[in-house]
Image 1: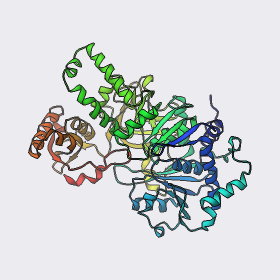
Image 2: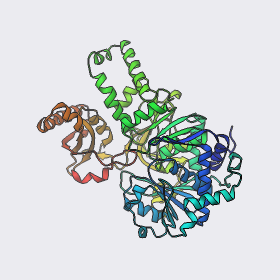
Image 3: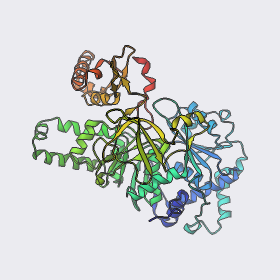
Image 4: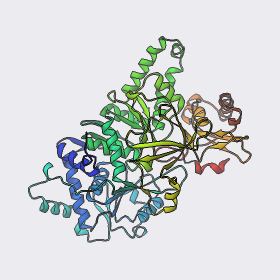
Length: 558
């Protein structure tokens, strides 16, 4: 049993660097350059020297923006172990959004990739003392003496401070209470309004603690990190928990297409996989659907006992595609398509769905696959860490999901009104999601409070459920169900143009097909959920980093 001191966020890394000094810690997948725990610790110590030279004090803000790489990891860990507050900025944010976050947070230092810096002018971020490249540590801009913080100067200071070298025994980080602020993470939600989540170290440590206790991470574990590190999901488990445990994380910096990821999985053979639904759904659609739709496989799948042989072969094929050595796949960030989820459970694919949010750093509910996860649920609240209840449930037990516990944020930075609105009077955090709890305590998410629509007689309509049915149709890449002023439902559909072109289908034939698809979907829906119109959309919808569609951009299109 670990003591409270052992749960301390900073101590996790002090112990890990000392105990795993010679082991491989991080690899930049694109370049195959690997750093050991010792080399990463040296980079962190050099950054501490840079911070001191810049006059950075406890609780000052340091921003970091760029694609996943080992330098990003070093900046994050160096900041929190120094006593400062890290401000991760998603690399996909537009320049004006990044500028707002840098200024709003009051960041004094900025570490940024060269490509992200191209859209920013120095006079737009007047409070920043220095900007440093995440590509190679060179100073990009300085309000300080450049001789104090260039790479050679820091190397000299490091040698003066550690004339006999820097070794495992030298790793010592100043004490920090878990109650102190560790990060301010700006959300990128589907509503278009970004808020700075104030996260204490306790929230970050709570996720690590759960990862340890549920054996999601362990010494020697291997992770492929393709979710952006600036997002709470990938940051918590593929990076923070993995390195706290003495694991090895491979950092994918390129856009994570299924082709790139499957290649990475086959090479690294990860011990656990974190993914958003979109990635798994694309792989399912490309790899599995073509097999199960062709005879005789489609026939055999309908025959009891014989179907088990086919399911076993498909499961093994899918497991091997992901490297063949992972314990389970964890899906989060958005709802998983029910048809995909049902098939994966049918073939006994080792997968579980979790539920979380940036405001909880992020995990709230999860049940590991080997502990009895249930299809279509998001698992149970993290035992001893998080609590969940349903606020004002209707006759079906559906209401807003509210939560509290160790992983919960302190509030939104410089935004007391939003903070007040985020919590109930008795201190529960509003998630904005509609859900229900079953008799065993498993949580089921029905949709977002803000996206729920009302039928002609006041019935609740969850557009995500209708979209899941539409997305299962051939030639459909993705869809959005919206409501017109006359209350009729309209489906914006982005076709899978690669499939359409391969089939030789004309525009007129595609329109006719989509009309037939609309009727087919309506046959599976209640009368008040009927889709009245299908409108074709020319390209993929704009999404958040966790691949949820930004609905607010499209509401005026119907």
